[in-house]
Structures are given as C-alpha cells and as structure tokens.
Amino acid sequence: MSAPDPRHVTAVSLATMVAAIAPVHLFGALAPDIQAEFGFGDAQQGYAVAAYFAVSALLSSWGGALSDRLGPTPALRFGTTMAGVGTVGMLFAGSYAWVVVALCVAGVGNAVNQPSNNTFISGGVPPHRRGFALGIKQAAIPTSTGLAGLALPTIAVSLGWQAAYVGAAALAGAAIIAMPQVAAPVKPPETRVRYRPSPRVWRVAIGAAFGAAAVSNIGAFLVRSLEEAGFDRTTAGLVQVAGSIALITSRVGWGALMDHRDYDRFRFATALLVVGAFAYPMIGSGQTVLAVCGALLAYGFGWSWPGIVHLGTVEQNPATTGAASGVVQAGMFVGAMTGPAVFGVLADTRGFGWAWLMVASLSAGAAALMSTASAKTGVT
Image (spheres, rainbow, N blue to C red):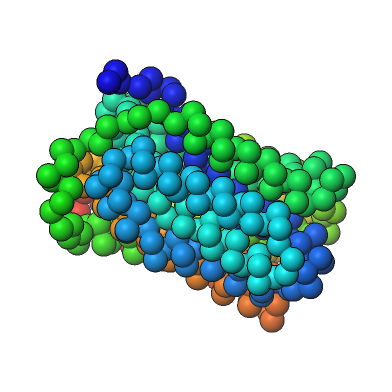
C-alpha cells in the first residue's frame, strides 16, 4: 500500500473534525431559533452543550485507545459516522429532549475523532509538517463556528435552522467517502500494553480542562452575548465569522511557526491563555466596540492554544499518540462540558458580564497550570 498524500490526509482530517463539532456549534449559533421552537432558555442550552461534551469526555480515552488498537482510519470512519447520525438526528428533533439525545450521539463521534485525528496525522504526515497539519486540523473548530455564524444570516433566516444541519450531514458523508487508508504510527504489539499517563500528561490534561471550560463558551454564547450588547442577529453572526477567520489564521500560523522554531509548546500555549483572560471581560462589558475587540482577541489568541498543546503531546508520546491524546482531549471535554453549564446559569441569574468574568478566571487558571507542564520545568 502506497503512502497517502499528506495534503489529502490533512484535508480529510479537517473535514472529519468539522463534521464532529458542527452539531454543537450550529446549536450555539442558531440558539435563538432553536430556543424559540422548542421553548427553552439559556440554562437549558448550556445543559445540552454540556451533555454533548460529557459524552465526549467519558469516551475520549476509549476513542484514543481504539485508534491505537484498530488503526486511525477505521476509528476515524466510525467516529465520523456517529457524528453524521447525530447531525441527522437534529433534523428530526421534535422536542428539547430529542435535541439533547442527538447531540449526545454526535458527542460519541467527537470523542473518537479528536484523538484519532492525532494518530491519523502522525501516521500520514511527515514530522517536519505535523505542526502545520495539526494547526489545520485544529482550525476545524473555528471553521465550524464560522460556518455556524454564517448560517445564521444566510441559510437559517431564509430556509430555517434545519437546513444548516443538512449541510453538516453531507460533509460527514463526503469525509467518509474520501478517507484514505493510513497506517498506525506504531507497531500493533505496542498498542496492547496498558497505557499509564505520565504526571506531565496529567498536568497538560488538567490545564486543558480549565482552558476548554473557558473557550467552549465562545461558540455556545458569543451570539447571545452580542445580542445583549445591542447587536442584531445578522451582525452578531458576522462578528462570529470574523472571529473564526482570525482563529483559523492563528491556529494554522502557530502550527507552521512550531515547525520552524524550537519554542516550548506549553509555554507558548500559556501566553495565549493569558491574552484570553484579558479578552473575555471585554465581551461581557455590554459596550459594542469593546465586545467586538474582545471577541476578536478571544478568537485569535485565547482560543488558539489547543493545536500547540496537541503537538507537544504528540511529540512527547510518539508510541502512544492516540492514548495520550485521548487523556488530554478528555480533559478538554470535561472543561467544555462544565464551562457552558456554569456560564448558562450565571447568565440567567447574574447576567453576561459576570459570566464572562468567570470565563476570564478559568483562562488565567489554565495558564498557570499549563506553565507547569513545560518541558523546561524539569518535572516529568
């Protein structure tokens, strides 16, 4: 079997990631219409997003081990199929409970796709291009939020919110068809050894949990926050698109920079998290100019660290890429699960200003934790 084209591998990785995360990002961007149809509020929206990430968190470690055991392509094909099933489920939703079930099914696909894609890229992309490839892979999340934001003033207004989910389901199907066969980066016998995360992997996972608890609220609540600041739905969606473009650019750019510079991955991520800590209160200020500036800073810096963290994890764990990535990704999912749930309650009871201050504190905590995972600390 000939080696697949790294560009093909990277493109499919991006598509499978978008397919896995699009259901929940569309849910956040289209929240006004979906809430109105099924009669639920911001707290219930947060609970639904939390349910998606709860499933992702519970199954992420298993998904990473599955990739090491079966190989990246079969695992990724399975995960993308589950994401597609959940997306189709949203099309037939008749109640809030059905929406939660559909998001949970999509969450299974997300749990498998996130760590499996690290193994997929490790097996199909040369080492000197992995930072760039992982940056593109992580650009899937802002691509998803950007498409979700674009769907609000275009597709949803004219055709209804369900039409956006038709496009997401089609993407999942196309990714499955186009997926190349990629060999696992390690020999099968090594994958049967029980994986025990190192203390450094645990520190990365905990820091990632705090960071994800902060950034998950951007996709889930930015549109609602901008509406509270006085923006109409169309303008709020366009701000989300602009932020997503900034995040795509930064994630790919940081990944390419890592390929050409020997920067400590985790210290670099720490700096990005610190910028985010200053940006989030600006979003909740209620001032239109500050809110836009805060959103762009949050997207371009505060949310651009995960690809760098994944690169550091892949580099430090070459023989157990899937399993180690699964542990780190589980931390991210735990944060993504709890962040929106707490945010929704605070937004309902105290207002968006207090909710975004909570997010800022989470980002600062993540920065402190991630700095202790630096390879230059001398602690393994």
